Length: 391
Image 1 (tube, rainbow, N blue to C red):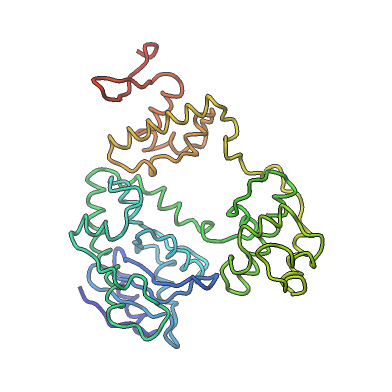
Image 2 (cartoon, rainbow, N blue to C red; image 1 turned 30 degrees about the vertical axis):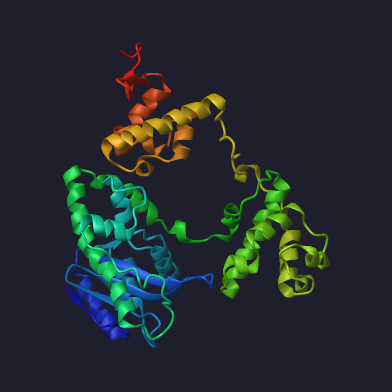
Protein backbone atom coordinates (compact mmCIF):
# COMPACT_ATOMS: atom_id res chain seq x y z
CA UNK A 1 0.00 0.00 0.00
CA UNK A 2 1.21 3.48 -0.86
CA UNK A 3 1.32 5.86 2.14
CA UNK A 4 1.39 9.54 1.18
CA UNK A 5 3.10 12.35 3.09
CA UNK A 6 0.82 14.54 5.18
CA UNK A 7 -1.48 16.43 2.80
CA UNK A 8 -1.51 20.18 3.49
CA UNK A 9 -2.60 21.74 0.16
CA UNK A 10 -5.84 21.68 -1.81
CA UNK A 11 -4.34 20.47 -5.11
CA UNK A 12 -2.87 17.33 -3.51
CA UNK A 13 -6.13 16.68 -1.69
CA UNK A 14 -8.17 17.07 -4.89
CA UNK A 15 -5.88 14.67 -6.76
CA UNK A 16 -6.15 12.09 -3.96
CA UNK A 17 -9.95 12.35 -3.85
CA UNK A 18 -10.17 12.05 -7.64
CA UNK A 19 -8.30 8.73 -7.48
CA UNK A 20 -10.27 7.47 -4.49
CA UNK A 21 -13.54 8.32 -6.25
CA UNK A 22 -12.81 5.45 -8.64
CA UNK A 23 -12.72 2.97 -5.72
CA UNK A 24 -15.54 0.72 -4.56
CA UNK A 25 -14.94 1.91 -1.00
CA UNK A 26 -12.84 4.26 1.13
CA UNK A 27 -11.90 3.81 4.78
CA UNK A 28 -12.31 6.96 6.87
CA UNK A 29 -11.20 8.05 10.34
CA UNK A 30 -10.65 11.35 12.12
CA UNK A 31 -8.67 12.75 15.03
CA UNK A 32 -10.23 15.61 16.95
CA UNK A 33 -10.29 17.44 20.27
CA UNK A 34 -13.46 18.50 22.07
CA UNK A 35 -12.53 18.81 25.74
CA UNK A 36 -12.64 22.61 25.66
CA UNK A 37 -15.13 23.34 22.87
CA UNK A 38 -18.75 22.75 21.94
CA UNK A 39 -17.92 21.94 18.34
CA UNK A 40 -15.37 19.14 17.83
CA UNK A 41 -12.04 20.64 16.77
CA UNK A 42 -11.08 18.60 13.68
CA UNK A 43 -7.33 18.01 13.72
CA UNK A 44 -6.73 15.27 11.16
CA UNK A 45 -8.63 13.22 8.57
CA UNK A 46 -7.35 9.85 7.44
CA UNK A 47 -8.67 8.27 4.26
CA UNK A 48 -7.61 5.41 2.01
CA UNK A 49 -8.46 2.24 0.11
CA UNK A 50 -6.62 -1.03 -0.50
CA UNK A 51 -3.99 0.71 -2.65
CA UNK A 52 -3.20 4.02 -0.96
CA UNK A 53 -3.82 6.01 2.20
CA UNK A 54 -3.13 9.51 3.46
CA UNK A 55 -3.65 11.86 6.38
CA UNK A 56 -5.08 15.29 5.64
CA UNK A 57 -4.28 18.30 7.84
CA UNK A 58 -7.46 20.43 8.04
CA UNK A 59 -5.53 23.04 10.04
CA UNK A 60 -3.07 23.68 7.20
CA UNK A 61 -3.22 27.27 6.01
CA UNK A 62 -5.21 27.67 2.79
CA UNK A 63 -6.39 24.05 2.64
CA UNK A 64 -9.93 23.68 1.26
CA UNK A 65 -11.70 20.49 2.36
CA UNK A 66 -14.34 20.71 -0.40
CA UNK A 67 -12.89 17.84 -2.53
CA UNK A 68 -12.90 15.57 0.51
CA UNK A 69 -16.43 16.52 1.58
CA UNK A 70 -17.69 16.03 -1.99
CA UNK A 71 -16.32 12.50 -1.96
CA UNK A 72 -17.78 11.69 1.44
CA UNK A 73 -21.29 13.17 1.19
CA UNK A 74 -22.04 13.67 -2.53
CA UNK A 75 -20.54 10.58 -4.18
CA UNK A 76 -23.09 7.76 -3.90
CA UNK A 77 -20.91 5.33 -5.90
CA UNK A 78 -18.26 4.96 -3.19
CA UNK A 79 -19.00 3.14 0.06
CA UNK A 80 -17.61 4.92 3.15
CA UNK A 81 -16.24 2.57 5.80
CA UNK A 82 -15.92 3.60 9.47
CA UNK A 83 -15.40 1.86 12.79
CA UNK A 84 -17.76 3.12 15.52
CA UNK A 85 -18.15 6.14 13.27
CA UNK A 86 -20.69 8.19 15.22
CA UNK A 87 -18.33 11.04 16.15
CA UNK A 88 -16.61 11.00 12.75
CA UNK A 89 -20.01 11.29 11.07
CA UNK A 90 -20.98 14.13 13.42
CA UNK A 91 -17.90 16.09 12.34
CA UNK A 92 -18.66 15.55 8.65
CA UNK A 93 -22.27 16.62 9.26
CA UNK A 94 -21.12 19.79 11.05
CA UNK A 95 -18.87 20.69 8.10
CA UNK A 96 -21.28 19.88 5.28
CA UNK A 97 -24.82 19.63 6.66
CA UNK A 98 -24.94 16.08 5.29
CA UNK A 99 -23.90 12.61 6.40
CA UNK A 100 -21.75 10.15 4.41
CA UNK A 101 -23.78 7.77 2.26
CA UNK A 102 -23.70 4.86 1.55
CA UNK A 103 -21.97 3.77 4.71
CA UNK A 104 -20.56 0.67 6.44
CA UNK A 105 -19.58 0.46 10.11
CA UNK A 106 -17.27 -2.39 11.06
CA UNK A 107 -18.33 -2.31 14.71
CA UNK A 108 -21.94 -2.99 13.74
CA UNK A 109 -20.81 -5.63 11.24
CA UNK A 110 -18.85 -7.32 14.04
CA UNK A 111 -22.10 -7.63 15.98
CA UNK A 112 -23.68 -9.51 13.08
CA UNK A 113 -20.66 -11.83 12.96
CA UNK A 114 -20.86 -12.64 16.67
CA UNK A 115 -17.62 -10.83 17.54
CA UNK A 116 -19.07 -8.85 20.45
CA UNK A 117 -21.61 -6.21 21.41
CA UNK A 118 -19.28 -3.21 20.98
CA UNK A 119 -15.94 -4.66 19.98
CA UNK A 120 -13.05 -2.19 20.07
CA UNK A 121 -11.03 -1.44 16.95
CA UNK A 122 -7.75 -2.86 18.25
CA UNK A 123 -9.49 -6.08 19.33
CA UNK A 124 -11.12 -6.41 15.93
CA UNK A 125 -7.81 -5.91 14.11
CA UNK A 126 -6.13 -8.46 16.34
CA UNK A 127 -8.99 -10.94 15.88
CA UNK A 128 -9.30 -10.76 12.10
CA UNK A 129 -5.85 -9.63 10.94
CA UNK A 130 -3.66 -10.93 13.75
CA UNK A 131 -1.78 -7.68 14.35
CA UNK A 132 -1.45 -5.56 17.49
CA UNK A 133 -1.90 -1.81 17.21
CA UNK A 134 0.50 0.73 18.70
CA UNK A 135 -1.67 2.67 21.17
CA UNK A 136 1.10 5.03 22.28
CA UNK A 137 -0.19 8.06 20.34
CA UNK A 138 -3.86 7.48 21.13
CA UNK A 139 -4.21 10.29 23.67
CA UNK A 140 -1.85 12.74 22.01
CA UNK A 141 -2.62 16.45 21.55
CA UNK A 142 -3.77 16.37 17.94
CA UNK A 143 -4.27 20.15 17.81
CA UNK A 144 -0.61 20.96 18.40
CA UNK A 145 1.56 21.62 15.35
CA UNK A 146 3.76 20.30 13.92
CA UNK A 147 2.57 16.69 14.13
CA UNK A 148 5.44 14.25 14.45
CA UNK A 149 5.98 11.09 12.38
CA UNK A 150 4.74 8.77 15.12
CA UNK A 151 1.44 10.61 15.35
CA UNK A 152 0.91 10.52 11.59
CA UNK A 153 1.91 6.86 11.30
CA UNK A 154 -0.47 5.96 14.14
CA UNK A 155 -3.33 7.89 12.54
CA UNK A 156 -2.85 6.47 9.03
CA UNK A 157 -2.58 2.97 10.51
CA UNK A 158 -6.23 3.23 11.51
CA UNK A 159 -7.43 3.45 7.90
CA UNK A 160 -4.88 1.05 6.41
CA UNK A 161 -6.11 -1.69 8.75
CA UNK A 162 -9.70 -0.60 8.20
CA UNK A 163 -9.23 -0.99 4.44
CA UNK A 164 -7.92 -4.49 5.12
CA UNK A 165 -10.69 -5.37 7.57
CA UNK A 166 -13.63 -4.40 5.40
CA UNK A 167 -13.18 -6.94 2.54
CA UNK A 168 -12.62 -9.74 5.06
CA UNK A 169 -15.74 -8.85 7.00
CA UNK A 170 -17.76 -8.47 3.80
CA UNK A 171 -16.68 -11.94 2.68
CA UNK A 172 -17.77 -13.44 6.00
CA UNK A 173 -21.08 -11.59 5.90
CA UNK A 174 -21.79 -12.93 2.41
CA UNK A 175 -20.81 -16.43 3.47
CA UNK A 176 -23.20 -16.35 6.42
CA UNK A 177 -25.92 -14.54 4.44
CA UNK A 178 -26.02 -11.72 6.98
CA UNK A 179 -25.06 -8.80 4.78
CA UNK A 180 -28.69 -7.74 4.39
CA UNK A 181 -29.05 -7.67 8.18
CA UNK A 182 -26.98 -4.51 8.30
CA UNK A 183 -28.84 -2.40 5.75
CA UNK A 184 -31.35 -1.02 8.25
CA UNK A 185 -28.66 -0.30 10.85
CA UNK A 186 -26.45 1.51 8.35
CA UNK A 187 -29.38 3.67 7.23
CA UNK A 188 -30.14 4.43 10.87
CA UNK A 189 -26.66 5.75 11.64
CA UNK A 190 -26.65 7.73 8.39
CA UNK A 191 -29.81 9.62 9.40
CA UNK A 192 -28.83 13.32 9.67
CA UNK A 193 -31.30 13.88 12.54
CA UNK A 194 -28.94 11.89 14.80
CA UNK A 195 -26.33 14.66 14.59
CA UNK A 196 -28.40 17.85 14.52
CA UNK A 197 -28.25 18.63 18.30
CA UNK A 198 -31.64 20.34 18.31
CA UNK A 199 -31.83 22.73 21.34
CA UNK A 200 -35.52 21.85 21.78
CA UNK A 201 -34.69 18.26 22.73
CA UNK A 202 -31.51 19.02 24.72
CA UNK A 203 -33.47 18.65 28.00
CA UNK A 204 -33.80 14.91 27.41
CA UNK A 205 -30.09 14.48 28.17
CA UNK A 206 -30.50 15.92 31.69
CA UNK A 207 -31.52 13.56 34.49
CA UNK A 208 -34.58 14.90 36.27
CA UNK A 209 -36.63 12.75 38.70
CA UNK A 210 -39.61 15.13 38.70
CA UNK A 211 -42.56 14.46 36.41
CA UNK A 212 -44.27 17.79 37.02
CA UNK A 213 -45.18 19.59 33.81
CA UNK A 214 -44.04 22.99 35.10
CA UNK A 215 -40.66 21.69 36.28
CA UNK A 216 -39.99 19.84 33.01
CA UNK A 217 -41.13 22.86 31.04
CA UNK A 218 -38.55 25.01 32.82
CA UNK A 219 -35.94 22.28 32.26
CA UNK A 220 -36.69 22.29 28.53
CA UNK A 221 -36.36 26.08 28.33
CA UNK A 222 -33.14 26.15 30.36
CA UNK A 223 -31.54 23.31 28.40
CA UNK A 224 -32.32 25.06 25.10
CA UNK A 225 -30.88 28.32 26.47
CA UNK A 226 -27.68 26.52 27.57
CA UNK A 227 -27.35 24.77 24.20
CA UNK A 228 -27.49 28.07 22.36
CA UNK A 229 -25.06 29.74 24.78
CA UNK A 230 -22.60 26.85 24.37
CA UNK A 231 -22.85 27.01 20.59
CA UNK A 232 -22.39 30.76 20.41
CA UNK A 233 -19.39 30.71 22.75
CA UNK A 234 -18.06 27.36 21.41
CA UNK A 235 -17.76 26.01 24.94
CA UNK A 236 -18.78 22.63 26.39
CA UNK A 237 -22.29 22.64 27.88
CA UNK A 238 -20.88 21.98 31.34
CA UNK A 239 -18.77 25.13 31.14
CA UNK A 240 -21.94 27.18 30.79
CA UNK A 241 -23.82 25.35 33.54
CA UNK A 242 -23.59 21.83 34.92
CA UNK A 243 -26.54 19.45 34.59
CA UNK A 244 -27.10 19.32 38.36
CA UNK A 245 -27.37 23.12 38.57
CA UNK A 246 -29.67 23.24 35.58
CA UNK A 247 -31.99 20.65 37.14
CA UNK A 248 -31.90 22.42 40.52
CA UNK A 249 -32.92 25.75 39.00
CA UNK A 250 -35.73 24.05 37.04
CA UNK A 251 -37.04 22.50 40.25
CA UNK A 252 -36.51 25.60 42.44
CA UNK A 253 -36.59 28.69 40.19
CA UNK A 254 -35.05 31.85 41.68
CA UNK A 255 -37.35 34.83 42.28
CA UNK A 256 -35.07 37.24 40.44
CA UNK A 257 -31.54 37.52 39.04
CA UNK A 258 -30.11 38.64 42.39
CA UNK A 259 -31.03 35.23 43.80
CA UNK A 260 -28.67 33.53 41.32
CA UNK A 261 -25.77 34.52 43.58
CA UNK A 262 -27.08 32.03 46.14
CA UNK A 263 -27.50 29.11 43.72
CA UNK A 264 -25.03 26.31 44.31
CA UNK A 265 -22.75 25.91 41.30
CA UNK A 266 -22.96 29.55 40.17
CA UNK A 267 -20.58 32.39 40.96
CA UNK A 268 -21.79 35.64 42.55
CA UNK A 269 -21.31 37.38 39.22
CA UNK A 270 -24.43 35.71 37.82
CA UNK A 271 -26.63 38.20 39.68
CA UNK A 272 -25.43 41.04 37.43
CA UNK A 273 -23.93 39.56 34.26
CA UNK A 274 -25.56 39.28 30.82
CA UNK A 275 -25.63 35.50 30.74
CA UNK A 276 -27.59 35.48 33.99
CA UNK A 277 -30.06 37.93 32.49
CA UNK A 278 -30.52 35.76 29.42
CA UNK A 279 -31.08 32.71 31.59
CA UNK A 280 -33.72 34.52 33.64
CA UNK A 281 -35.45 35.57 30.42
CA UNK A 282 -35.54 31.92 29.29
CA UNK A 283 -36.96 30.94 32.65
CA UNK A 284 -39.59 33.67 32.43
CA UNK A 285 -40.76 32.45 29.02
CA UNK A 286 -40.91 28.77 30.00
CA UNK A 287 -44.25 27.00 29.64
CA UNK A 288 -45.49 23.69 31.05
CA UNK A 289 -44.28 20.64 29.17
CA UNK A 290 -47.09 19.31 26.92
CA UNK A 291 -48.55 15.93 27.85
CA UNK A 292 -47.40 14.36 24.57
CA UNK A 293 -43.76 15.22 25.41
CA UNK A 294 -43.89 13.80 28.92
CA UNK A 295 -41.21 11.09 29.33
CA UNK A 296 -42.24 7.58 30.44
CA UNK A 297 -41.73 6.65 34.05
CA UNK A 298 -38.42 4.94 34.71
CA UNK A 299 -39.94 2.30 36.95
CA UNK A 300 -42.45 1.11 34.34
CA UNK A 301 -43.23 1.76 30.71
CA UNK A 302 -46.71 2.84 29.60
CA UNK A 303 -49.03 -0.16 29.61
CA UNK A 304 -46.44 -2.45 31.19
CA UNK A 305 -47.71 -3.61 34.59
CA UNK A 306 -46.13 -6.10 36.96
CA UNK A 307 -47.10 -9.11 34.84
CA UNK A 308 -45.90 -7.37 31.71
CA UNK A 309 -42.56 -6.64 33.35
CA UNK A 310 -42.15 -10.36 34.06
CA UNK A 311 -42.98 -11.20 30.45
CA UNK A 312 -40.39 -8.63 29.31
CA UNK A 313 -37.79 -10.34 31.50
CA UNK A 314 -38.64 -13.69 29.87
CA UNK A 315 -38.25 -12.11 26.44
CA UNK A 316 -34.81 -10.82 27.41
CA UNK A 317 -33.84 -14.33 28.49
CA UNK A 318 -35.13 -15.74 25.20
CA UNK A 319 -33.11 -13.11 23.32
CA UNK A 320 -29.93 -14.20 25.09
CA UNK A 321 -30.60 -17.83 24.18
CA UNK A 322 -31.36 -17.12 20.52
CA UNK A 323 -28.42 -14.72 20.15
CA UNK A 324 -26.07 -17.34 21.57
CA UNK A 325 -27.45 -20.01 19.25
CA UNK A 326 -27.14 -17.74 16.19
CA UNK A 327 -23.77 -16.33 17.26
CA UNK A 328 -24.91 -12.74 16.90
CA UNK A 329 -24.84 -9.80 19.31
CA UNK A 330 -28.19 -9.59 21.12
CA UNK A 331 -28.16 -5.80 20.85
CA UNK A 332 -28.26 -6.01 17.05
CA UNK A 333 -31.34 -8.24 17.13
CA UNK A 334 -33.50 -6.32 19.61
CA UNK A 335 -33.40 -3.58 22.21
CA UNK A 336 -34.98 -3.65 25.64
CA UNK A 337 -37.54 -0.98 24.72
CA UNK A 338 -38.89 -3.17 21.91
CA UNK A 339 -39.21 -6.18 24.18
CA UNK A 340 -41.12 -4.12 26.73
CA UNK A 341 -43.48 -2.83 24.03
CA UNK A 342 -44.08 -6.37 22.78
CA UNK A 343 -44.78 -7.53 26.35
CA UNK A 344 -47.23 -4.63 26.75
CA UNK A 345 -49.23 -5.81 23.74
CA UNK A 346 -47.86 -3.68 20.90
CA UNK A 347 -47.61 -5.50 17.56
CA UNK A 348 -47.28 -2.76 14.95
CA UNK A 349 -44.10 -0.94 13.97
CA UNK A 350 -41.68 -3.20 15.87
CA UNK A 351 -38.47 -4.06 14.02
CA UNK A 352 -38.34 -7.50 15.70
CA UNK A 353 -41.55 -8.45 13.91
CA UNK A 354 -40.14 -7.67 10.46
CA UNK A 355 -37.55 -9.11 8.10
CA UNK A 356 -34.57 -11.07 9.35
CA UNK A 357 -35.19 -10.11 12.98
CA UNK A 358 -38.58 -11.84 12.83
CA UNK A 359 -36.99 -14.99 11.42
CA UNK A 360 -34.14 -15.03 13.95
CA UNK A 361 -36.07 -14.01 17.05
CA UNK A 362 -39.39 -12.23 16.53
CA UNK A 363 -41.44 -15.32 15.69
CA UNK A 364 -40.33 -17.10 18.87
CA UNK A 365 -40.79 -13.91 20.90
CA UNK A 366 -44.37 -13.61 19.66
CA UNK A 367 -45.02 -17.28 20.39
CA UNK A 368 -43.69 -16.85 23.93
CA UNK A 369 -45.88 -13.81 24.61
CA UNK A 370 -48.97 -15.52 23.18
CA UNK A 371 -48.47 -18.79 25.04
CA UNK A 372 -47.21 -21.05 22.26
CA UNK A 373 -43.66 -21.33 23.60
CA UNK A 374 -42.33 -22.04 27.07
CA UNK A 375 -39.07 -22.53 28.93
CA UNK A 376 -38.12 -26.00 30.08
CA UNK A 377 -35.21 -27.73 31.78
CA UNK A 378 -33.96 -30.83 29.98
CA UNK A 379 -30.95 -32.77 31.25
CA UNK A 380 -30.03 -29.80 33.41
CA UNK A 381 -30.04 -27.37 30.47
CA UNK A 382 -32.44 -24.53 29.70
CA UNK A 383 -34.34 -25.02 26.44
CA UNK A 384 -37.49 -23.89 24.65
CA UNK A 385 -40.46 -26.16 24.09
CA UNK A 386 -43.84 -25.87 22.41
CA UNK A 387 -46.76 -25.81 24.80
CA UNK A 388 -49.30 -28.66 24.90
CA UNK A 389 -51.96 -26.43 23.41
CA UNK A 390 -49.70 -25.57 20.49
CA UNK A 391 -48.70 -29.19 20.03
